[in-house]
Length: 77
Image (cartoon, rainbow, N blue to C red; front, side, top):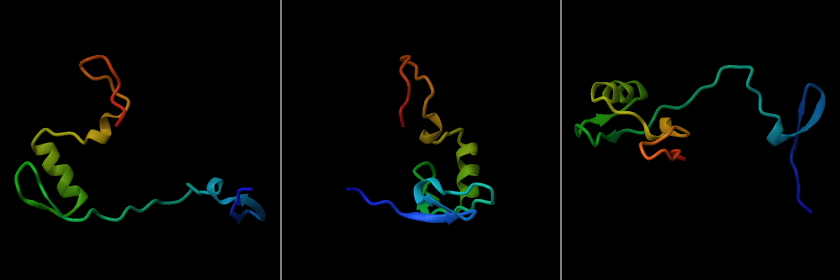
């Protein structure tokens, strides 16, 4: 028998996995610093990463998920 965890939402018990709220702001922590494979510079923030990717005409592979590749197959990420 599997166990479930329940939480109170609006006065009702709801399975925790289904109780996620999305009606408020969402905050993401900043990225850990890393060395850019393009320039060798240290990238320390998401904005710096976006700027470098834009400057060098690069895209994140995660943004390709579900798009068609040149061979007609879908990129599954």
